[in-house]
Length: 138
Image 1 (cartoon, rainbow, N blue to C red):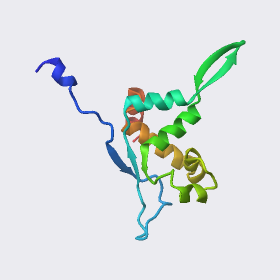
Image 2: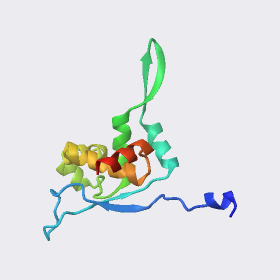
Image 3: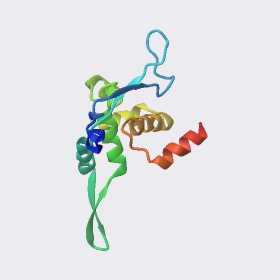
């Protein structure tokens, strides 16, 4: 097999996974309701990163930096299919009109981190070192 064929693989964009973020979110049957997350393309990831850049002056020189908090919020919004953080009823319940703010209003610190980590894992955004460390700790 030629090396070229090894690289002709379908994109993982759109791949979905159900993850339980917390026992706190239960359906009518009393069972935990999973969040449905999806993989995004690198092109979409770059767009999110560009949208999350801010210019700051360092020694009087403008320097562009990625606002990591804003980037994480955008990544979560782009990757979570269910629940729909853009839903007007959900935004209203959590006291905001901005869907980017819903997850941080809705989730505890630990829940937010579990959701973020699941999204990073699905999108293969964890470093090999992080994956090895996780395997050692599990």
